[in-house]
Length: 420
Ligand SMILES: [Zn+2]
Image 1 (cartoon, rainbow, N blue to C red):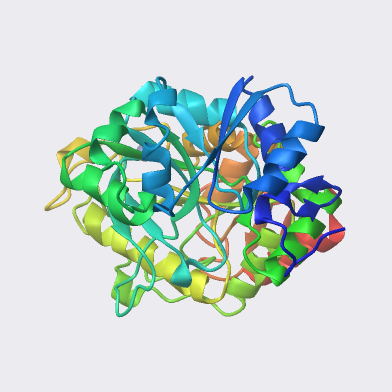
Image 2: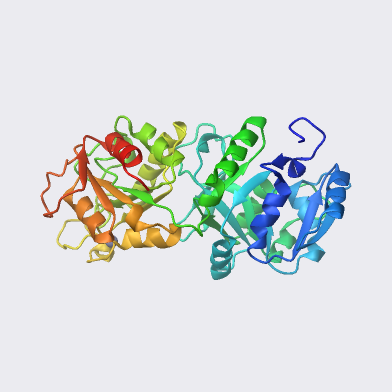
């Protein structure tokens, strides 16, 4: 087996018995992709020989660059071969993605570019993407971030679906990088770029250490299990009083403080097969106590605090509504009964749809009876923690399946004593 440091180009490295490229072609097969263009910079002979010696269901064409032109320039050189929307994979990534979901997302919106984005365990040295509520890219924050404020953990995973309408923005014969040059250029020109967020597995094998980890994940089945075609269980988590200190009213970033042991417990969820999904009522928006920008800043701080500890939440949903009118300064657009406010289950249903969650194998961890009621309404098992309100609100007459001290104990209970 050829390993690191040899003359083998990365896409030809053997990982768990197959080349990186073969893993990628396998992933692409699900969309019945019939035509693959391989853009290679050097050592093309190894790749040419490989494809001459093996049979593939796809038509595979190899284009060798005379001079390195970056990802933008290399793509521009084959523009005449790309007449419809196409996928771009990087040769040093291993992924198992439900591409039909990505395609549906892209086709629904019709942007020039859809970027696959995800939370990862090192956002502090990753290229971050800022999305709006409609999943459009508002800004790019490439590494290094320097003295930046808090940011959501939304990382450009380097897998794209592009339209040929992108080519007028890429100069032929000139070095350019898709991420650093071309996408910011599209934004500056007012074009739409979309961000498709997914908890599925995609990692680069850029260092020997990462290569080993990724290989372990392929062999253990973790990579395949995270494909959104497969149902996964989730741990739904209430925010205030469970993850962070309860403050009694709408919490702004300056007051947001994680509770002890929370990052470590979240890390345990990240390493398990459970998704970590935060579900929070934020009626402060409707009451006019906090703006959406302030709430976004708080969530950016939460992600950043988690990120520095190398842990992350997979998805966050919040309800900005409140049913009762009559508060000074309230925002009438949000003053309405809704299906998302807990104990309503619309947020969980949306999560189940977007993340293919198996409710029966899932849990809800909260500090109030409303959280227990929400879990019961959605068909999950429930854990009440004694941090925050500690279930003392007494609003709903219901019993949790289990109660314990805090988030950390709840996660131990779920991972150590129950079976998925
Ligand atoms: Zn709502």
